[in-house]
Length: 400
Image (tube, rainbow, N blue to C red; front, top):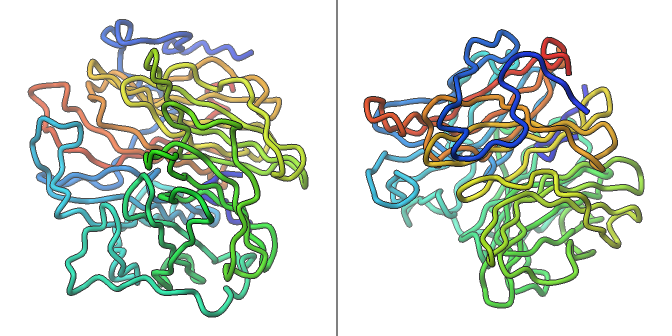
């Protein structure tokens, strides 16, 4: 069975169910009603524990083999702070959640116990436990092994450096940590977005620092020798942005066409949104496309892009607001040239802006599964803890 990677292969609409949103903002969000009672959308908790913080699936990765799903996230002590994220970073560790039934139930696994033994940002291992990253001395045998996984982590989100791990058995055991080169950039501090191209060939899309050392640009990289060496093939975007263009989610549409969505920020005036780039020459050059999402709210959101079984593209993202955030979906039936209006998947929960970072897969039954972090902290009577949530969406029942 084909494995769907986290970059998602891990995408005019009319709805008649009353929660359709053409152009939502903070003001309209204050009046939003919950869609928990919509039978075609089901919300679940993946990991939730009092006194603990859980977040950022998009900083990790998601994979699936039919209805077996593996997704990474960060877990830490809850810590009340005036800052944006309510966690004690000194206690942060990487975790995985695994489901064998399409996301209905989950088991939590510790990344360190599975072999991810290197220190990284938000995997704050003590010195006596953390292993130093090493050089990969033998090529990875076969990227096309259906149980193969690779994931990147970073020392910081700006100029890195980055490390990687790989697994040949669906993440039950990981090899690494291995050093990843900076490829003559100001530094690579990347997440995980890749496409398997052949037994020894793999494409990856990565965050790099700008000349000032801050995160902000994207590169397309490739290995053709099982990970022993990497080539910087091209930059996505001709110029260094004043803000940033980061956290891509990419699909291959044909042997020569690649489509990538990404999280973007402009500075003057400030705007968080999503951009898209397309290559029709197998990644040698890139053209900017129509913006999939004009506004992603306070802080912005990374995209979660996949090509569904029917060929359409699905794009999941968060709109973040201190007045009440939401998880959203858009659909494209022309390979990302145009997009539907926003489809609210979860709203009206009194979630503040510390949410989102989605990952997404399509289940064997055709339903979409979106994983993200969530809270109800805008409600002063609710518990403040952030948790990992899932939404299962039946597009057929929605008439989409």
